[in-house]
Length: 307
Image 1 (cartoon, rainbow, N blue to C red):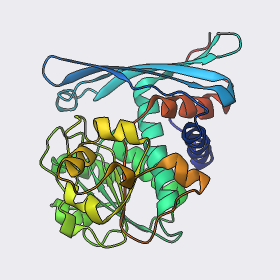
Image 2 (image 1 turned 180 degrees about the horizontal axis):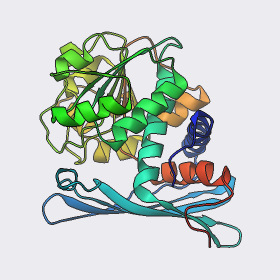
Image 3 (image 1 turned 45 degrees about the vertical axis):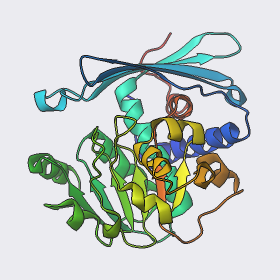
Image 4 (image 1 turned 120 degrees about the vertical axis):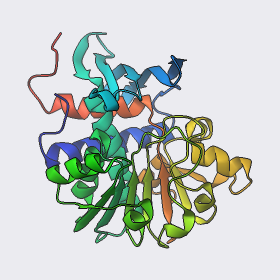
């Protein structure tokens, strides 16, 4: 199992991601684009690898993304992550790819939340009710004193099951969920270019973690929101290639590439939010898997598979 055993381990994962993104920003690590093979309509096979020289490790992740799976009781994502030692080449751990993906995606949103919100931000809205939504709530709650959580899902039954696991309020509409929320997390796995969240529904000064789009043109939030927001991405090139809202906003000349601030720059303190609404648009990068695997495997005496 790769799921964090508690808040301390989750915070360790967030801190590992911060260090990895700082190194990425300084050119001290390699995280090339993933290979994505689409097949059978909207199913995907994804392969990603990264080297984190400062920690002496590298990782390879193979995952499958099958949007029809949740409807038939199967996870959206299956996969495996292999962690290796750079010095000896030895495989040091093999971890469940689906769980690690949920953990590190939640953790990177937790990092962005820590960097972009007030210390007392506590009203959270979540769109989506799957495994990733659970991970987002845990990660955000690890860095901010969450007082209330509202959730919406396309399937109300999914939202109600989510509410049995966590103390949340189930909402009937996206608008009711996000209105006046201080922190908004989207995790809907949409592949649609029609946004779920209208720009006018977002309170000025709110922070959004947008992580659910599964296609390079998919939009969970209105690209118009980006025009007046402080924008944060993992890496400019990756966001321009894979983030639907970013691609749409650039196409409509609402933003310029220079408006995209890399997460590593915020970690290093070379840029900082300026009081506007902040939007963190994540696409997921192999270095995140490497950092999360280091944090999770180094804190345990038994990995998922020992070699």
